[in-house]
Length: 132
Image 1 (spheres, one colour):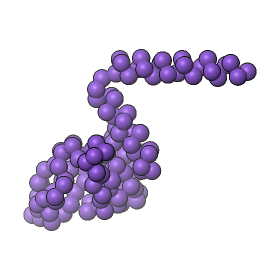
Image 2 (tube, helix red, strand yellow):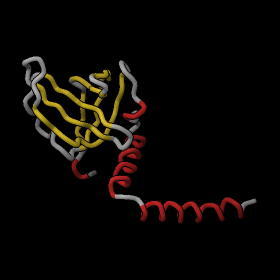
Image 3 (spheres, one colour):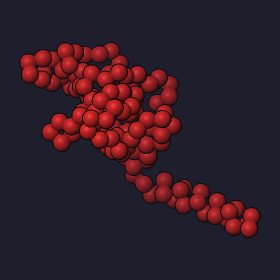
């Protein structure tokens, strides 16, 4: 009986190695981001629902200044490998450290706006640059 688990283990490692070699760079980065979310104890963005209080983590893909109802708003797209959401800080033109490629953890009540997931004025924590 002990030989069966031992024989399955190398096949699993070999299969993962082949999968990594045949996967695109984007697939590998997405898998790494999904693992990061699990390690940090965060909810995957793809599993979030409207009006749910969530803590999510991922990488900022874009950061733009986009006024909403005449008020300045800093808007960023956060991607965790499963899906993306918009993070919006109302009344802000810029925030030090919020830039494309930066990893962060954000918490707040998720809402749906025009079919996209959005976090307005979330609590956030920038991830250390050394871990990226």
